[in-house]
Length: 291
Ligand SMILES: [Zn+2]
Image 1 (spheres, rainbow, N blue to C red):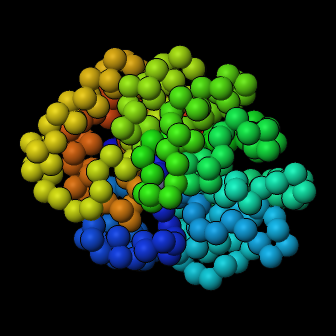
Image 2: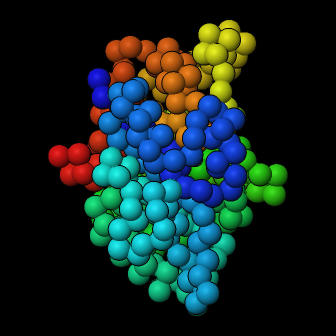
């Protein structure tokens, strides 16, 4: 089975080189693609990260820039690396909203741009802020999902009240034709995330970032058995493996170790869905890229 990694980062942002080394990797396109070939990973969705402000004051879509210098037409990414345009929504305001949304629309015309990514905890702005609504309307129009960083944040100055999975419920209800993806399963609020996904037919979960760094999978499986059992319990409670997508959060975690643990966590009968088919259905623009 060819695997799709529905959540990684393809960027030089924020100490990612160092984090890649800690995870036993090199933060480069060449290294990543070689690892993909070795592990049977066909394609990935990279979450745009970086700085979303511009000197003109717009909220610029954050894209992926590991493969080369900034290029406004093509970002130089390999064909099998799609991306979500990241929103740095603390830059978004009434004055620049229209122009900013136009820039996101321009990105969504790119076949590689398969979704929009929100960072509410880092940007300290709730998902239901009306400033975001035109972006959700764009997602609906272009039939792409809105991925959301939910749960714990990597930096102490972010505020987790904004990234709590319960905040997804209201936008999911208000935009029933938009697919929302709760990245990282809302961890550690896994029960809350389960409820939001169970209740709303348009809410999905990516399983990225549930472990970081480099580790022996056998050690992790034993040392974190309570945590993994908890995840398993609530995944089974949701009892719909059409809701979950495999993702890693590379370069923050070792790809092989993570894959080994997740293969064991997800019931074998659901592997096709979780490791591949759900991503093709939810990030549906991937189909054209891989055709
Ligand atoms: Zn991430």
